[in-house]
Image (cartoon, rainbow, N blue to C red; front, side):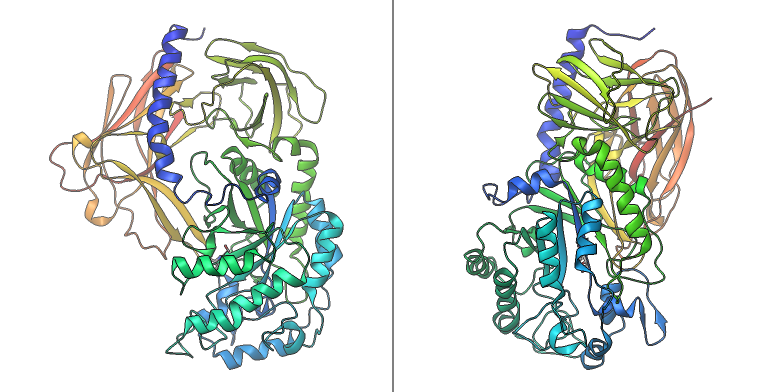
Length: 596
Ligand code: FHN
């Protein structure tokens, strides 16, 4: 029933493709990797996998409104967006009285959510210190009626729950201070050195001195310092707590671990310690009218996807001006924690999965263990796992002692799934094996199967020819609501063709859909898709002009149907036709939809 080519030949192909991938994939995404790989704090950090970010400040009280105008997107940027005068904005502190804040409840909710470290804003760009600072009077103790230090309480509550605690600190942007970065509507002729000397560094020293051992300091938005000055600042802080990690946004690649862009997951596994940062809705700071919360299923998929690439997810919650979390954040985080109670073994302490993402989901791993995160049940209940050559000892559903039957073939293992899975969002199977299992996580061959509604093949997995290359496009919906997509650019002549190696598991008809963006100047170029000896000519269609602060438009352009008469390996090629005047398009992914 299954189309096979001789096993040795397959292995050779796998290794060759792996070799090609290994040469260029890390170059594209591994830059800026951990600068300080020997830091002792990286051990807990790498095992933690799931962190909680909390953005809380005066902006939380404003809740997305200033002078009767509503703002969407990053609520903590409201002062900047409204160009609110520093003196007027500072008055918000006079009514900032978060009596609903309960540190023990925050830490308990975090614990129930399965959170393994917590990072809270000590000072965001607005310049207001959410702790008792002796460096300034613009802090919660002196400027607000609250008159208590919530960070003292929170650090103690996290300690009681065994959750490593850290501070976010905006080291350069400070719209309250005449010499701080960013506020050019009130202040001119700045002396950034003076700002670092008189506020930033002294405050960082306070934070590293007065709140017990910190897990990390999450620096954000570097500026105003040379690499040497940054190094000197680090040295002066490091001595206070050598065990504390510093995030890469301290600048100049001098952090201890790497942070990706806001809301960015790298497309391939990344070595070293790193973190993806997302917020639960569209804003980091509380906005009353922002109810676009990620569902438990979305959080679980995000968490397992980030883990499948080897990183941590730090998910942000924005408490309101009274110190209460949005109800959806409490509820959906707790639901995530419930999932983690059953499936946490497949997340905590793991590293990337040893095979690429499959139509059914992703994988994570530990020595001798492969965790199969089943996001989508195959219609025939046969889960096909490619490339496992180590000896499989057992396959179980995590959290139940239910052992599943499997058939290990040279190229793939087929696991028989039960009629229903315990968790339709993500049921994790534990596959235990003995012996060496090669790491095939960067294997380019992508699986296509009739058992799922469609196969989405991301552009990064293509083999590039000529001038075709992958480029990261960053754009936003709301202000600061960043999106990131890797697309293939540079396809102008037929020499710039790209090839997707596919493993098509079932013969039959497939609709080919190209997902791309195309600027007006680039439209109406001719392209050709080739697969299984069939050709689909197409003309590229306009979407819109790319601008980093606007939504980027993509079209899903169905270019035709092909018939695959035998299951097995196929190459799908996309190439511009000769005579084109400009780029064909910026291709984000190819979709193969089985025709039923
Ligand atoms: O400007 C900030 C933003 O407000 C938020 O704090 C995020 C979180 O990663 N960091 C900055 C932008 O990258």
